[in-house]
Length: 427
Image (tube, rainbow, N blue to C red):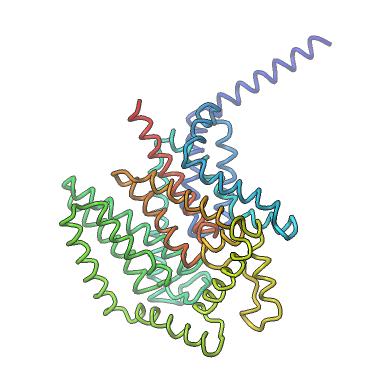
């Protein structure tokens, strides 16, 4: 009996050593770097692909984790902040009035934040963060081409998008498409400035033209009004971050002139903005559930619920239950079930009160502060964080699928690369 037992032990030991050697091989490390690249490439096209690739990546990452290094990485504020927000959501289930199932459904949108510490840890050690950015840019460029094609030839649209106006929107909606295109434009602009300073003028011009094409698509083809909240402020922040005071003033003047030219040259833009007033007037006079009117109604209801529980809120999952109850018996779109008030701060405050807002803004601040450094990666991180903050005034983007994963992936990859560089410089 001893010999077979020893033989089984030797076999398991040898199998364990082989698995350990394989998971430490260059091929395995390559695969761990590859899956975030696939996520970045598929983010615009498929929700299922994002979840599948992220799940495979997580299981591929686990054998590569070094406990001491991972523990050190988790203690960084940029890793602790999303964990704290998720932890608050878990604890918030204890004082929620609804069922445990409702609480679990409310926990779902926050759960993606737990991926952030793992991305930050992995890309501290990886030298392939730029692969993710390239995959995102290439995929967005393909989407850009499709958008222009179906704008001029609508019959070629192969999939039905959704939203207010699907003209020039191949997939998803204009809000998601604008988020991606503006990020690409801002990233390309930063690389163009760096190329110009390195006396690479042809590259700088080509990158600048591509950035302009992305922005032209936003303003002339498929405009989400949410984009107007962040495009101009982020353009000004870009100028401040990349130029001296005199040049910044010149760039600001150029932005003002460009804005006037775009306004004058785009009836589509003027129509989209003017329609806000039309929607508000219809909402006030006829109570028609316009986009603007619905937001105002949701915000008013949210403020009332926040006043009922200002410190710790109504608990995880309570937002949807409260909105469902308020919609009962109402006609048409007013009776539709919604899950959030289209404002990130209000969404958090309903469920976790002032405490939740403090944790949310602390996370945004910590991530913004992480990227307050010179260089393209730092600017990309700043752009991702600020875009999420600005756009979350009209949407609950941190908890939405597309914009939430865009934040998690972008901050995780860029932040990890930046933290890794800082570690190398400190050694």
